[in-house]
Length: 90
Image 1 (cartoon, rainbow, N blue to C red):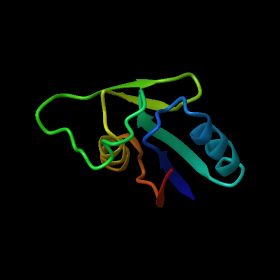
Image 2 (image 1 turned 180 degrees about the vertical axis):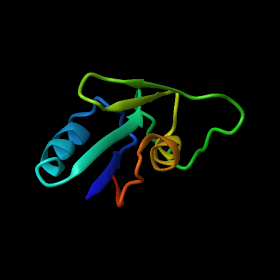
Image 3 (image 1 turned 90 degrees about the vertical axis):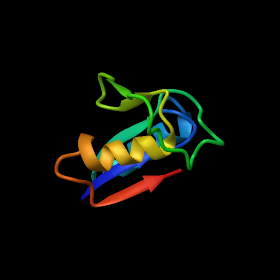
Image 4 (image 1 turned 90 degrees about the horizontal axis):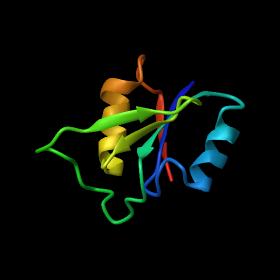
């Protein structure tokens, strides 16, 4: 199973890292999350500017200035190949 894991608290939030560790015991997990806390911007989608990504040594991807919706959109449509079977967000 392939899982795209995202959140609105940012890629370095303890919760997403704990959840990723647990899910990786039985699935292929790709974390794609904002580079900072973006709570309150969860339903926003960036349409008028470019987004950049940064991949960490462990494979997690941060979307610079991206919203949680941007992260899921990019994860499903561009960053995960083949596409994920499920998206988990917390």
